[in-house]
Length: 428
Image (cartoon, rainbow, N blue to C red; front, side, top):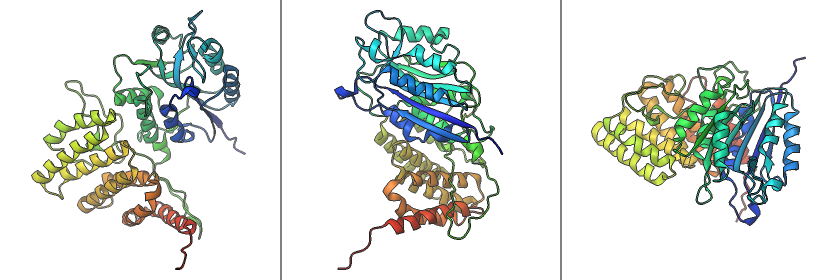
């Protein structure tokens, strides 16, 4: 009998004084909503979310319980760091009710967190996307440089200043890190290299001058590589009446939307799309517009980014024609911008358009055509009430792909379930 490796993901939200009307921490919500169970390199995973734990002793009890699990342990901490107003010097993770005057009694001492993780028997990783008030910032800067902020625990993440107003969307580092984890590395093994993923997230997030990056220690096998798990392999056909559980893996941004490398330094693209066929060189106008488009999208100015992309598409249409690869690349840009803005139904529709165009030019065996279709499927899964409307067109595309039976079966099962759960029609 093969032993099952069981691990744990603990999401610890250190947002202070929630009872006084502070908005829920969008960074913590983004992590919880990304289904972090998939990120852990374990056969079975427990996920424990602590969005508003009351008091340091309760938080410590949850930490100790998670650390007792023998397999890999991922602790993802968000929120604010403080030091007590009196007898300061020891960093605390703020908890509901914490202020500089009360954090000594209401917050979780950072040293408690580290000691608990040091006692874990298996591989451990502490990820952090935190903010620090002005009093805590010097301790963060010194601790990040000396290693005292980690004390031997593998620690990766960022600490930013407290923003002037509560953030309404997840921090850019967490968004980029989730994207990297959901994408994986198609050229790596079953476990991701944490420093590489961390650097990739820092680069994509565009950290500001006041951001303190955290990188300490050498993690063991903690983060699963979803790209390796998603590599094609023979699968048995489901029995009659049994729905397929096929799921497409999220893929890296398309070639059309990858951040151009700054000159004169040239570094490899951190996330090439798997099985990519040669992509036509983009028009010069695209190179000119993309940095501004990406900057606007990452800053949350999604309407501005979409308008700039539409202008670039019009230039390509006039110069190359509607069926050209250059115009098709702009459809992919618009699709990924829609995904970044959270409009998954629109993103799915645009990715289907891009996939159909690539099928027409290169056939369904083309690697980039299949990648576009997988992106369409991924966005379709997140399109909520619009999924039923989009499903027939997506199904028709998968039926053109050799080996697409699993994906097609997944869509048919969704349509059947939607039909069975639809409210009965009342005769008039």
